[in-house]
Length: 157
Image (tube, rainbow, N blue to C red):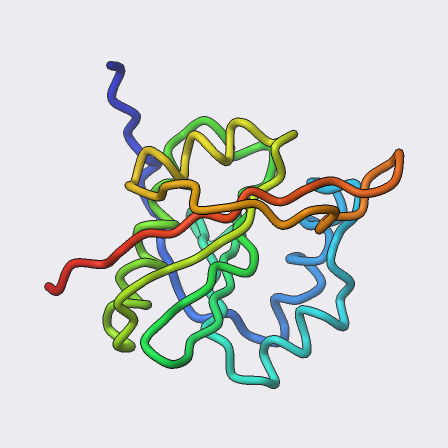
């Protein structure tokens, strides 16, 4: 196994409204069916834990959770194309799991497209396991795509 060292100057901080234009650009460049700027704004206004990953002050990615009833849900996790392959997605995911734990979550859920094997591999590498499927969950070019539902039980700190 090759160790990946994340770049110096990496920081995870709370997302702010002034970050949304950059986040929206990263989202649109990363996904065929991206979230709108309004969805990100709604997440901030709803009080969801929304986080930015930056490298030397440049936004390189973001992650958004929802919390409730002792559970967390990873709603969105993305690293900009220029920053992929450097361990930043794993770093951000681990910070999101810490945040979920600190907020009392005992279990974390997420959905991932079967057509995104790199993301599925990332989630499995930190301990997520497939627990089911949501048929026709995601929009796709030729109709709809199932979602793989994954879960991770959090151990107390």
